[in-house]
Structure formats: C-alpha cells, structure tokens
Image (cartoon, rainbow, N blue to C red; front, side, top):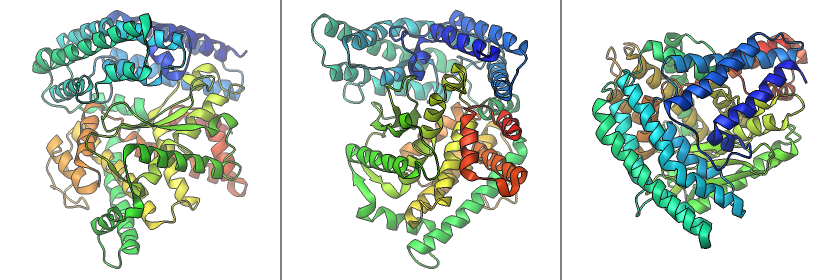
Length: 556
C-alpha cells in the first residue's frame, strides 16, 4: 500500500462515518439508517477531519507518478474545501438546486428498497428527518447573524419547492415513497409515521425560510468578484481569467449560432431561420414522444445502443459499466442529472429526469445529445470507469473526488466527440447538440456577467443592451433570446445560476480545457498520438481538478 493511498483510504472510512448521507450517494454501505449532522458542530467536525488529512498529505512525499497525481488531487480538492469553509461558503447557502435540505431529500432516491433491512433504514431516516432539519436551521440562523445570509429570492423559491414536495395533490414526496414500498405490519406503521413526520418537517422548513430567513435575505443575488473567483476555482479545479472567459463566451455563442443557421438551412431550406427549423422538427411526429414513461424507455434504448456500439471501437468499456438505468425522478424540479453506481455496482449508474409538471410531450431531436452527455461516452463512462479502477486509483479517487469542470466538461466534450465520430449525421439531432452547446455558452456570459455585475460589451455580436450592466432581468431576457427550452425549465435554469455561482460555466469552460488538453497531447506526441489511447489515459486518472489534470497528462 502506497502511503498516499493509505491516507486516502482511511479518510474515506472516517468521512463516511461523519457523512452518512454522502456515504449512500457514493454507495458505501453501513450508514444508511442515519442522516448527516447539519448543525454548526457537524460541519465543524467534518472540516476538522479534512484539515487533519490535508496536513498528513502535505507531509507525505510521493514515490511514483500515480502517487504524485493522487497527492496533487487531494491537495487541490481538500485545500479548496477548507478555503470555502473558512470563507463561510460551506453549508450556509440555500439555492434551488443545492442545500442541506436537497441533500437530505434526494438521498431517498438512491436507497435500496429490496429487503426488510433496507426499508427499515428508510423508516429510520424518515423519522430522523426533522432532527436533521433542526440542526440545519441553526446553521442557517448563525450564517444570517454573521452577515452571510442567502439571497431572498432563493430562499423564497426553495420554500416554494417545499410546498410542492408536500402537496397532497402534487409530488407528495414522502408519502409517495412509502406508498411505493407497500409495507404492512409494524415496519409499515414506522414508515408511515416517518413519512408524516418528514412531511411536517419539510412544510415547517418552508415556513421557516419564508417567514424567518427571507425577510433577512440579501436582495442582490450577485456574488461579487471575490466570492465568484473562489467558486469558479472550486468548480473548475483551475484558475481562469474571468474577464477573458466572459469575452470568449460571446465569441463562442456567436460561432455556435452561425453553425445552427447552417444546419437550419439543411432542415428547411436556404435562408431558413433556426426558429423555423425548430418549428419543423417539433411538428414532426416521428421526432415526438408522448408520455414520460415512453420517453424514459426511448432514453434507455439509446443509452444501451451507445454502450454496445462504442465498446471495442472507440472505447474499452469495462463490463460493470455496460449497465445503466434511465429513471424518472420522483420530483418535478426540471433537473436532468446522473448518479453514479455503488462501490460494488449492485446499484448501477442512473440517468434521472425530473420532468416539470404539465410537460408530457418530448422532442427526441433535442435529447439525443443529452443521453450521450449523461450516459456513454459522458458521465456514465467517466464515473463508472473510475469506480472500476481499484487497481490504480485509491478509494478517495474512486468515490469522493468530483470536480464539476472535469466531469461536466468531459460530458460536454463527449457530446462534441459523438459528432466527430459520426453519430450526429441527422440534421435535427445535430441542431439539438448545437442548441445544447449554445445554452452552455450563454450560461458562461450570463453567470459571470450577473454575479460580477459586468457591463455588456458595446460591440457584442448580438446588439444586446450594449453598455448596460447585467441584472437577473437582463439574464432572463438574454437566455430566452438564445435558448429554445420551455419557460418552466428556463426559469429553473436562471434561478440555479443565481443561487450557485460559478457552477454553470464549468460545463463549457471545462470542455474548453479538455479540448486544450487534447491539443497539447497531440502536440507532444505528434504522429504517435492516438485518440482512443488519450481518452483511456485521461479517464484512468479519475476525476481531478483541471489544472492537476493537465499536469498529470503531461507526465504520461
């Protein structure tokens, strides 16, 4: 056992004991009956562990290139976790997509339900839900008293989410969960009691956000440059010039929209606009699926087909990774996401779709590229392949290290790669990919612009409010002008950006850095460069910050 690996593996065990909810997310058994301590003391205990482990890693000299990469990865991630905690960014922010509440609720989506012990764990967690939220309330009150209040608009939106989750005529999440278990007897009574308690606690938490915290919340949702720089570095695992990146976002969006106009002409005819092409595609019954379950089955078929066709041709996909499940999420928040397999692969990797209420028709031309993003060669290949590599990656690298710019950047790179490999020859599906790429480019502009309250360039290629400063209202107007997704989904998207500064650009900026890393590898290896080998070597490193990734690839 290498010393760095020994430290990392011991850290995972200690971390899981302090993060039982997180242990379920990554598939570590033995903690599924407990929830995280979200009180200030709970966050402090987890941070103390991080601090001790980082000091141990700092004091240990690597003895091999693999150990060197593992050390760099741990220093980068754990160091930024400490920096964020000391800046008041850990556990204290409430947004529509990430908070202690969201972590507690969504863990039930991943819990096994097959045996009586599994259902007993669910009952235990349901009955501990209120206690966990009480601790979280204390953390949020202390943050607010310390001048680190969340934005008022985010607090009110999350309160509304609480209302939806407990609505007996809507999602009715906790009672719906128990109803699906169909358990009788004493355990059934415990489950129903827990569902009632968790429902009441969630409703009360919504009231707490609405009446106690929201009146004290920040009216300006902009993060400001100092907070944003730290957030950007955390999500990318790299330092980037934010002003240059902001300017690049305009250039990239203009390039993508020019490509979209070219494809639109293929679909409708010369001179056709993108909106005309979209209308033609949406009107094509062959490209429309009705019903959530039918759409899930379509996604499953496409995901399975991609695995079968890419294995042995462009990738060597481990046997455990050949299984992916496409699922409908039990909520209607509008999110699309991937969850990785458990450590032993008894729980497979899953692609989730939280379909907004009222949406029942789905355009396949838009979502082919989404399946590649969430499945193979995107997240599922990347995350699940990392989980397989026990012989080369320590347990921390396989289970706990996740960098948004690395992961989301790879998944967006994977969409473009599928075009390169000839999988998007259909003009409609190619337009769907370009439209998704344009959404991510627009996010770079809007996220950086709104949070830094930058001036809109007077010479921007779209003639959009030149010289004005970004506001949420201008962000909404810009996104509606450049993105072709339903208003319900787009509203959630914008709220997500405002509440989670720096995360949304990590997709497109991460892809940009992945493409640079590939170009660098081509330049180093010349005629010996092999794309399949590059992908294998890069993915075998596991998830790590994009700056450490580039250094590690240079050593190969």
